[in-house]
Length: 451
Image (cartoon, rainbow, N blue to C red; front, side, top):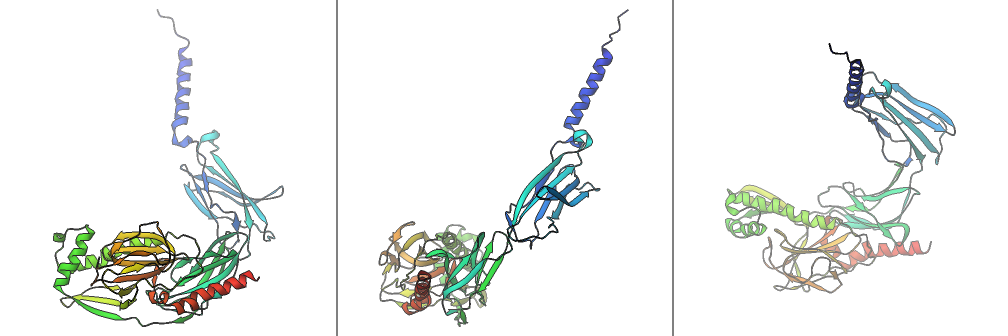
């Protein structure tokens, strides 16, 4: 007879304990990850907007508590148990019912416990303590000098003062888009040239200053607004134009073979819409990389000597092919013509930000002159500069041509203010520049320097 092994029950119990430990260690019911508390990373609060708090846990939230700490006193603001095992809970940070003044520091403590069986069925608990400074005082903003008027499709200048101890952002609005304000002369002073896009039917200029607590100061810019009547041209496309010029533009783009198109209408639409859009996106990409450098004196732009205007800004062109609508476009520059392959000049100092062969615009140069002012030179036959070159007033940057979608040798000259094409003839007019830009900057300088 074999002798009974008295250790068997011990090993069985030990195995059961090991299995239980493995089960507890691996079971989702005993997960050991505490809840996650998500709250915006803020330092200042004006108590006017809701601060969202989010609790997350894979096993569900069992309870949470929000406390306000003042000196050594802990005041419970929320103490809630959750019955339906929600895995995420959202609520707004409560405001303690005490007398609060600007500059007070609110100290909070948030605790959350999950439904895990870990910690002897008590669950995992996490807590977060943080402080928020109360700030209900709005920023200051006041205009120092500005242009008297702005025309539809044109632009105007404003210099202003803005201040807040916890300043977050400053921008200028035309009612549709927001623009950068550039530092001017001394701390706290800013300048912006504001465009009224030809595509925007109305204009409402405002300075918008916001602090880190969410307080916002909005100041109206009282430019007198003038409407302009821009020409509408109805153009009938000829087959020969499609077969020659449009085919050439598409082939130069090199994206779709000509035999992929089923009609002349399809080819024209592709060139006028897709290729044009690609061109302008490439231009905007370079322009919206704003360099916050300043230039406080702008000369009238005279890119072509002894030239005549052969194409006007804002011309709304509506195309037909075989009496059917074929699309439309806006002419967003001024066409200038002189002799063939005429020299093209830089009228102001700047930096070349784009030198590219584009589809519709052809060989194109864009120069950054500071203050958000960019000039564009298109349909060139030759480039004399490259990207990142610094150009000076009077430098020759290229020669006119007929590259891209051009009817004969000429220069397409455009002006953009922070990515918005504006009335280029304004910047070619020395009297307009003096009255609306340079005199405004000079007046502001005198006021600021004499304070």
